[in-house]
Amino acid sequence: MSAKVAVIGAGNMGANHARVIAASDRAELAVVVDVDAARAASVAEPLGAVGETAIERAAECDAVVIAANTEAHLDIAGPLLEAGVNCLVEKPLADDLAAVDALIAASEAADAALMCGFVERYNPAVVGARDVMAGTPRHLISLRHSPHNPRTRSSVIDDLLIHDIDLALGLVGGQIRSVGGGRWVSPDGVEEVVDCTLVFEHGAVATLSSSRASQRKVRSISLTTDDLLVEIDLLRHDLTTYHHRSGEVLDRGGPIYRAETVVEIPFVRHAGEPLAVQFEHFLDLVSGDADAAAERATLRAPHAVVHQIKEIVR
Image (cartoon, rainbow, N blue to C red; front, side):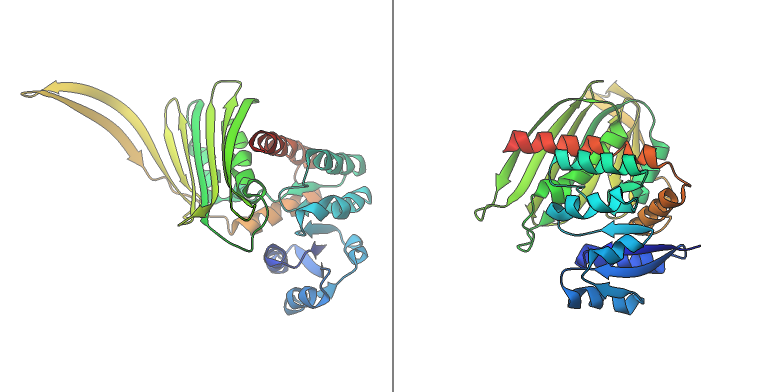
């Protein structure tokens, strides 16, 4: 039986979610809700759904995908979760940590699935990196840079950096001992560049760079363990691994250093568009085929680090 799903928010991200839901053979896109009736209809009707302005219509569905403005997430998702409606909320879950905690608590109390739109978790290169990783993580470097977009007014922390915080926590693992960082604010007052360093209790270090002031789009992660370097290209969905095997100094009329490094390009299995794979996991949470409590347990930590970074850089 197909799950009836609503989308709240008919902007670019909401439209993408609606497209993915409509294409799933496990779900029915029932309604798209937006404060702008014409915009809701323009997303819903080509996909065979109904455009609405009343959130109450979404509450009639089995599950809801929320892609509204972040500041509205608590007011929208809170009552839905309390009513037992399963929710996938675009990142960040809310605009402050107290609101994130409130949503998690509401989800747990009502035994409703709650998922955050950390879509990079489903990037095939990230999934592949987990499969090939060997040794203890020591150092992670991420770059998430984009050219300037004058229409984007939210902080680069909520827009870009939060993805790499989530990935760093998942790939490196363990508790955070300390957080540091800095920022650049544009002349019109928008937080466009934020870099941060996370030091883990077990000694690993993650350096994360996010920018909307670049001249090109970059999405990359380098993860060094005590046995391997894994380079992850999040745009091309591919991996390269490096394993340094030996180094020696040769005497050939003068000192010559020779190093041997094994370079491999592992096969990356593509399960589909990451947004669609994410949605299928959400349906598994809704149906009970995936552990909603385990999913819920992954939500607070990245938001707590976001909260720390905002306090530090501001």
